[in-house]
Figure (cartoon, rainbow, N blue to C red):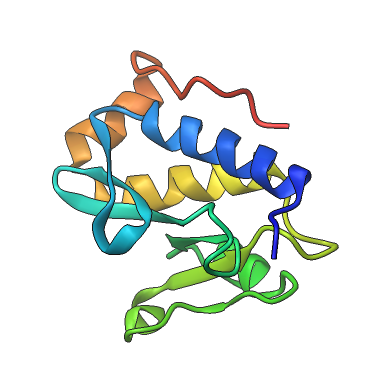
Length: 136
C-alpha cells in the first residue's frame, strides 16, 4: 500500500525535527529508522517504504499527552512490552491523525524523557537548534 503524500510530508518534518535536537543521531536497526540520544532511542520512525503501517512510536510520560496520543485513530500502546513504560505507536495516515506540529511536541517530550538532563536543559536555554523543520 503506497504511503500518502500528506503522511510522508509529516514523517519528513518529524524526522528532521527529531534529528535537529541536541546530539540526536539516526540509526537503522531492524530495517527501520530510529532517532537516538546518548545511544538510547527516543523515537521509532519506522520504515517509509510501505512494508509496515506508517507511523511513529514515542515515549509519552505526561498523562495528558499520553491520553491524547492514544485517542488518535489507530493509536495503541507499543508492542514488545514498551507500552507498559509509556511508549505509544501513532499512525500517520488515518483521517484525524495528529498534525506534524503535535507530533513534534511529542517527539520533544520523548526526547526530554530519554536524554540526559544536561541535553534536555539546552532546549529550555534556547541554545540548541530545534530541528530543520518548521512543524505545520
